[in-house]
Length: 244
Image (cartoon, rainbow, N blue to C red):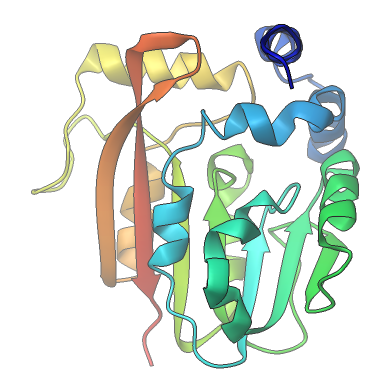
């Protein structure tokens, strides 16, 4: 893609972001209305927006013939981060609510019979048997009932299974000892910045993850956003293990 074409494509995505998430009757209809016009350029633009995905996937342990579920898998672009480790996966369920993104996932992954692209809700989808790994990549903050999504993910994991999350966030006003503490201005700014596009930042995400998975690793980071290089958005990478 030539530079002028990239700028035009980016402009179309930015315009959609400026318009924000529609306020339709259902979460599924809102996602479709928001993402369908962006679907063609979704991956290329978000490659510069969504940091930490490769690092999260590299930290997910994969037993032989692993059963992996991605909740909110979108176009399936995250699978490339597994690299040669994908050979250890026996079955991969990619679950999402947005038909426009799932259509691109089916096109991309048609030659991978181990990958099952499923239109489903992260709060209710349940595989036929317990799984080894579940992860959310910049989707937990977009799920209105995120508590239900986490409970569902926990329930589908085998004893000793692993949950991974990478997402935007801001700290609590008084975070637990050892965690990052963002200023009131930082918390307010990013909460309102992302809310416009249906991303709900809530410090309770990290708190709840740490409580549900006492055995875990949490990294708190910040990264640049496309076209606003002076700003760094906070995000985290979490990997937790379910008790035996």
